[in-house]
Length: 302
Image (cartoon, rainbow, N blue to C red):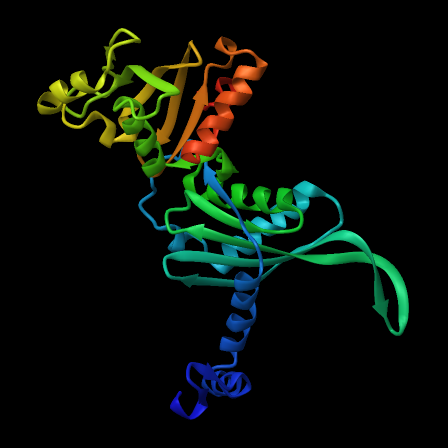
């Protein structure tokens, strides 16, 4: 490597490529594919209601033969005369990458020095988490990529599964910051007065509801419960809902998380309490102050 160092941290790129080719020609294919990963944008999706993890890992499950069979089944289901081809499958830093090509948009193509009508091939890149509960997708036609991802994980978990857009989810750390801010009354626009939660000290289907008068601070009650059940606001997965006052209206926020993915939470709100202007102001306040996305209750998972 020292011989290929040109200046400071800059290397002779062509020299590196020839060195890789000499070591193993297949490495050039990996460089070509991962170059696409670095240069393209990805959308992030999470598995809706993740099932229990199978005994076999997703890495062991997703062999090239299995993926090719899944792509063949996908083409048969689409029945659009297009073929989907697996170009590469790599496991890197606890992520499984699939590089797939499939025709998409109509285009003018060059064939034997003639311009003909055809379909331009599209790259579909799937970047799976090790447990298959999350995937990053890069594709011009994301619908096709999601269908392929859904098919693969459904086969892995042996039940129908589907990915949903991660933009509807929030980081658990942000949600904790929001709840602590409301409980401490540092946010003058929002006042937390009720919290419905579960405790690891009780049965899983047992819910506790802590309620105060909307004008009274809830922080004292949370502190009083700390010794008995621990820090309620520390484990977002155990919190089902909260009620708070916004612009004089009592709104409810519902938290939808999953123990398999404790880092992300979907937040839905009871939209019927607020009028159109109030709903817009509420969503804007949550986004601008806490970076949180809240959705109408109808979009929450049952």
